[in-house]
Structure formats: C-alpha cells, structure tokens
Length: 117
Image 1 (cartoon, rainbow, N blue to C red):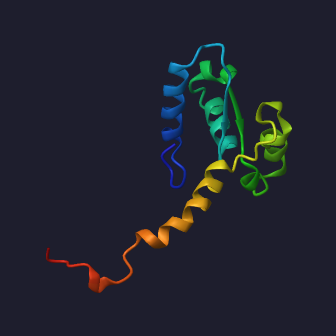
Image 2: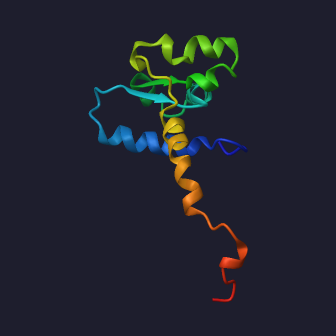
C-alpha cells in the first residue's frame, strides 16, 4: 500500500467512506486502473473482508490490455453485466475535453510575471 506508484490507501479510504454512506444492500463497482491489484490486496492480507461481498472490481479498458491475460479475463469491464457498455475511461475523456482550456489559462512569458511583487 505504501510503494511507489498508485497509493492504494487513498482508494481504500474513499471506499470506506462510500460504504458507510450507502445502504448495506448496495453493491459498489470500482472500475480503476489497478482494480485487480486492489482486489488481490484485500484478499491476500484479509483486509476489510466485510467489503468483499459488496465490491466488484474492474480495470478500465485502456489499462486492461496492458495487464496479464488472466487479469483481463477477470477484471475487463465487458466481462461483467455490472459495467454495461462502460469503458471506464470517463475521467480521461473529461480531462481530454478540458485540455482546450489550458492554453488560455497559462502565463505565456516569464517577463509578464514579477518575482518581487
């Protein structure tokens, strides 16, 4: 959970908060770039076992193809009815659309900014 790269404890903290605030009969789908690793961490370390029946993990389509074949079989979103036709890339598509706003918001020259003000 503390190694370089994706910090799993952030996701676990978020899931804990979500699970506290939704009805106990709801199933929660977690479609995440490293959803397979998150699921395996919970099972391997027997961490938050009460969550397991309520969670279904998936890996977004773009990332699923970079994972091992077994991971694709278990965690690809099109292998589960829960995800429907979602590809799991909604956030990436949203940020991609916002990229058009970036040039108008950035400073274009160092001479326009006073370092001593």
